[in-house]
Image 1: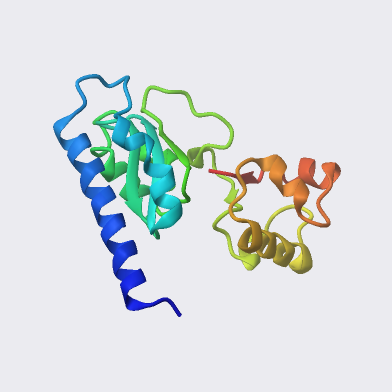
Image 2: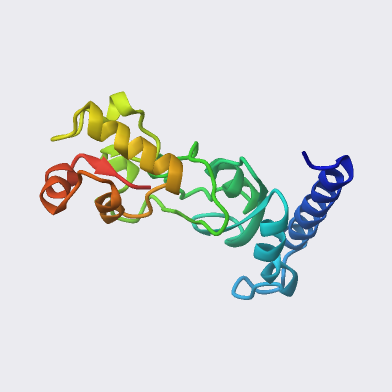
Length: 185
């Protein structure tokens, strides 16, 4: 069990990092194409504390690297990036998805075409679906559904559809069968 002073130190470091990044985002950097030097150090801070460094781009007020507390959702990262712009198509973004350190969130705008894999193009989100929901996929029964959930819990979210090939029991043929019915945000 960590000493109370260790918990306090982690909390202070995390809070300080959030305040620094918040101040940089609030007051601006003078150019939307540059990354402030203080923000470049966020991944090292995130590894030591409960702060996650997340890249938010697309239809947000201040695209770039933001810091959010561990346990944050995509909606929190978008908020930390100044919020969505008026032309953001938030229906194509899973706002409830949990964040991971180093993740990249792209907020689409309403004038961008919908591409396969967008939330709006439907499909079961393999990173959020329960085992029962995964059983609705073609060729997926209770055993394979449990393997998908167990793999996700052990190794983290799937970044691409092809990552499902790492799940025992899913080969190329099974993936082809499932591909049109799934999404990986």
